[in-house]
Image 1 (cartoon, rainbow, N blue to C red):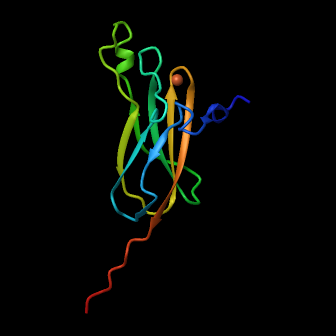
Image 2 (spheres, rainbow, N blue to C red; image 1 turned 180 degrees about the vertical axis):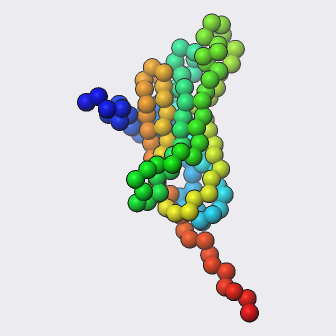
Image 3 (cartoon, rainbow, N blue to C red; image 1 turned 30 degrees about the vertical axis):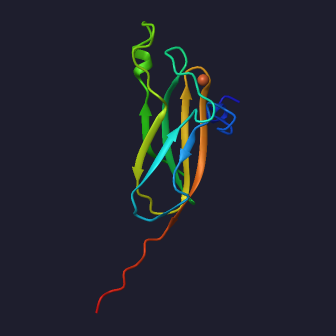
Length: 139
Ligand SMILES: [Fe+2]
């Protein structure tokens, strides 16, 4: 199979250093602003050198029932390419990102990470969004 989707890998982040980790509340209220963090290497550190590193990460949201995912944030960890000719590496960027978002309905958070040697890895996490409370009209 030659489709791009067939090359996307997935594993438990506790046993695979490339698997993204999504840190977000299990439940939020519609319209509330909250942080979502995506990273990797929390249990098993991924190499972070000019020769072997995470190039970028993306954070996405698939609302329940939707066909298309929504990109929430994207991070390029570009220090590595700038430091390839020096030893030690003068600057390195850890694969970590945070976005502050508001959601209107429940869905699935998705994180994707690209390693320059081992390809694309994904993870997902369900998030429940409760309706915002209605304020009764005042008399
Ligand atoms: Fe790797």
